[in-house]
Image (cartoon, rainbow, N blue to C red; front, side, top):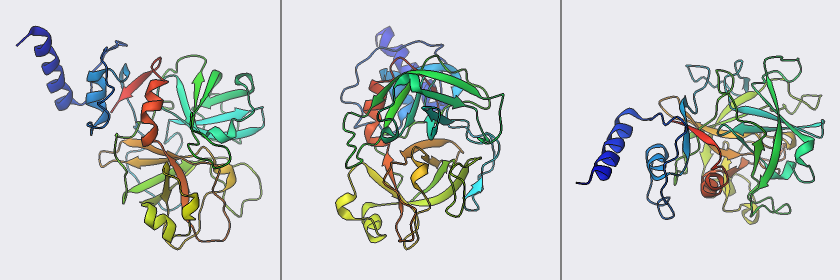
Length: 310
């Protein structure tokens, strides 16, 4: 066995057994054009095959709360989800987003139409929007990348990447969420809807603190049965909710995230709320744009960033 092959084999064994490796910013060069369909666990194989580079000893998807407890739309604890981002557009519109690595925010493309990079600021480590938080970090952005298949009329592929003007320094209040495992649908699992969600009977337009809500992730047949028009249910859509109940997401919740918590307590980002949900009195689930089908696009356009491992 050649020395190079032997070293790669040892690296593989170490990663499988210990779950992470500290590369100190190194880049492992390899081509992976046909690997995405045969991988089932992102962390190990993506690292070996050069899909992304690691930031060092950081871990993604770790909340600042040990016990998962969902009572139904309650406020999160302070900085419970350290990857939440507030996006300020033209100093007025507030949109939610999520930090996925040291340089990029993922959010909904529909809210960024017509805005330039100079008109957008991102706040990380923020919890209460209604009170000044001097510990939060405000960052300007360099540019926006809309999903190439985003369609404003049909709201398909409602995803956008925002590149921050400088790398993010991770700490307890600011750290990224994990990207989903390739090929995983998470159907039948409980998803966590997280964001600065305004309740229907709330009179003001802004929610001060983020809320979380656990709901089952539905398949397409269940989505249609629950009230979603089949003509409007696109391939990149997913649904979350309880059959026969109304959507709890309103128009101002665009960019909020749908997450999945594993048994180990690690969160994956599985969806972003698009601009198609209406919080009226008609029974229907909440629609989200699935992140999984766009993994190739995300990784291709974030090669200049580093990721934390699971």
